[in-house]
Image (cartoon, rainbow, N blue to C red; front, side, top):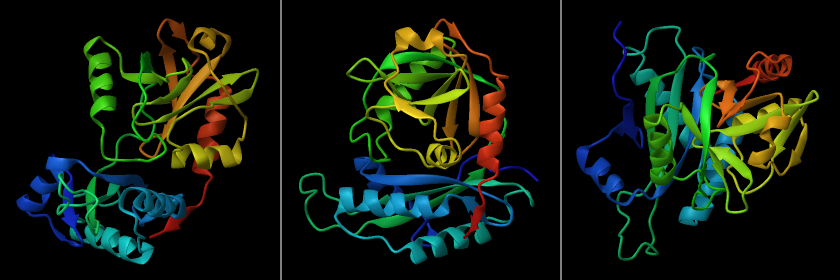
Length: 272
């Protein structure tokens, strides 16, 4: 069966209208979380995804989310799109809290966020190792998974135009922080180092760190050559090896990376 070219979308459990999408696109104000959903509708770290939505909603909208409502909308979207996703396939579900009625002139006016759910086929769970280059960049409100992706995607696009797969950010203090849409870790002498600094605390990284705590420490780009391996984490691919950062090459077959991947897969998936 043909895969959909674009994500199927629903707003508050109903098909999205052009007017609602247009209003949301004009401001870009909102936040989201992205989950890999198994064929039997389970998600690793579902409780953490719902907690993230609740936390970020308080920051951006000053209101509370209802986890039961969000779960109901996600299940409804999965059921309605069962015919366009090959049976047995995993899918990516993005849950966004958006504000089509938000006024640019008066964003402080009371606005009730609405739930936008999109469903698309999941990518390969074991993609090829990444070759990335570093770039100076700090996301706005780095602790929030907000919808403003302009800076991150522009940096990713520039890196890809120059022949790289992706981009790794270096913060204002000159230390490694995160990838464009992923967290990062490095391996030295069998120990995982998670860069400290201003970055989004990803759900996948959190789940991996529960199994493999490692250490949290500043990572200087000039010292990357002292690590044997590096990896990216996000909900789409779990744990993905880094082949290179700038001129530094890593071992994508390092045994610790396989251990991290297996540790992530061992995390029980929670039912929607």
